Length: 217
Ligand code: E4P
Image 1 (tube, rainbow, N blue to C red):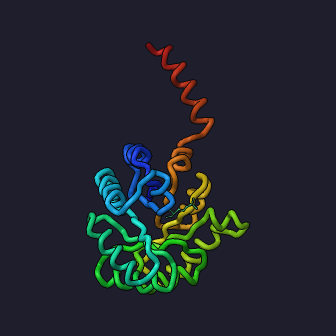
Image 2: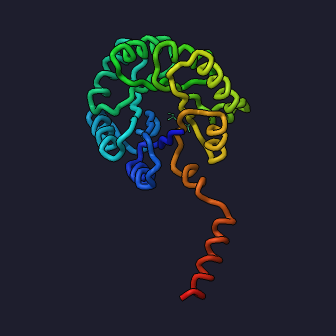
Image 3: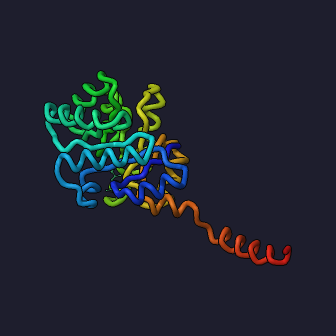
């Protein structure tokens, strides 16, 4: 399973990269706004900076919602760096844009997926990734993991190449559950990734080993 980090914060991206387990980055307009990025030039420069840190797929989301604008914006984003993946919302014009980029050989990530039908349409249009939003479904008392299971079944039935990129991860159990189900990728903020490291028995076991190692000197 691939690990992406879901942030536009360069420090956190560096920290995850330094762990040696990072395969890519996803961003969205809310995450970019959180970092205070404003204006076309600043947005492009920020993506350049991310691409310089991580050698992997970097999702850059279009801000527009019509077909013509999305393909113009997506072409500009894709020109920033070969690792840019154009992130397109799951809307009717978005499906057309996915097909346009797929035909051009440009990678895409179809975002805001909340149903198996949406994932199926995105895969048919040639999306590289579909992003089902786990946590946001959980927020409305709907089983987000079940959605990922259903998409897995559909993609396996027809051997679609489209990868399931589990998004809106809120805690480390989401990551474990996605790995059990067979999501191809998870994209997570840094804390859930770091909390995979933790176990109290590891901490107490190490404390004991460190104490006993003094007796060996
Ligand atoms: C996906 O690519 C999105 O950036 C993200 O996972 C949304 O997560 P949120 O529900 O925590 O905003």
